[in-house]
Length: 419
Image 1 (cartoon, rainbow, N blue to C red):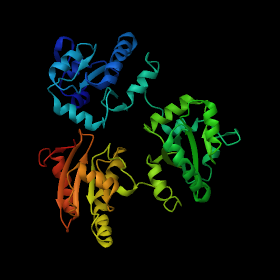
Image 2 (cartoon, one colour; image 1 turned 120 degrees about the vertical axis):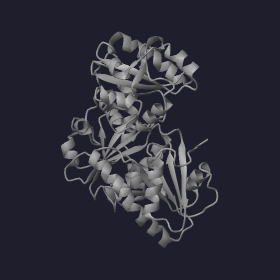
Image 3 (tube, helix red, strand yellow; image 1 turned 90 degrees about the vertical axis):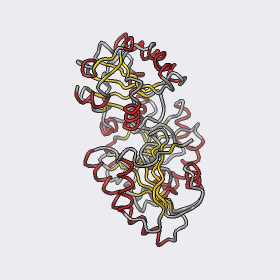
Image 4 (cartoon, rainbow, N blue to C red; image 1 turned 180 degrees about the vertical axis):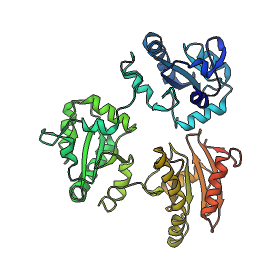
């Protein structure tokens, strides 16, 4: 219970707003669902009664406890909303712990349900889908099947409708791209012909296999759309497999392209950006670079604190020097994440081209005047926080590392918030 107390704080609130120690409240529980929700949120008000019904009927008896983590705007709203709930809550006044949890689990929207085990280790960050698809808890505590196992069991077909095993699909390949798409989706219909052209012209010969994972609404639409594609597909009949793959790779929008290596281990979930920037496959299989370029897309800026180095008005030599300076700093965090089997603590992005997304972000953080080079740290998961760093022609790795250290030392930097 010590790990859960460290995660949630020493006290929780129960019925009648009575406080009890976290260790006492959660003793004997096999799993805990952190329920990020708020009374002002219509989807939350729709989901809460369902979750409460499932909890009372089956889930509590199977060893699940739910802890409400409130995003309500004031304590009165919290108390009113919590009064409808049959579980525990984090004390409303513990805003620091609430913000810490939101940041840790990258909560960008509510309702969200994060399920952890008795040791505080994450079981799934998509608890809402897990519980909704199994409200009686037959698969409690909903440990996700590893993606490699899902893929090994996947039913694939070729353009003729013939079955293809996953082992045959990856034989001799350098990489596999899971293409989440659908005919009804306009951006998909715009991207599919480009991807097909790149695949046919260069990428297939260089060792890429693509597997279409359909979000079409019926089999006829799937067949019509798949007929335009020169690769393999997940059998449309395997809807359960499709849903599990979408959940396993965090696919929340389409088109989405996930790149795997020949052992079916994830290389990048931003395959669309990677291939669009390198359609000839010169850098296949597109391992993420320590420092990305904003011109190739926003990357994980919505999920991970991201250091941006703006240098649009610098000359090409200076831009290359700045990227070279930033790369070793980024590599330290990348290697630490790999060693811990976790996401990097920070993402690193260089901004070399004016206009478009660069101009939009400059406007968002109030940097209309292009003073280069300029450091900005955006922490969107922390309620849209951002921090303005140094602007200097002589930026060094020491300056960057000092900026990151000041960010981690709470209160050292001026916190600003996106409108």
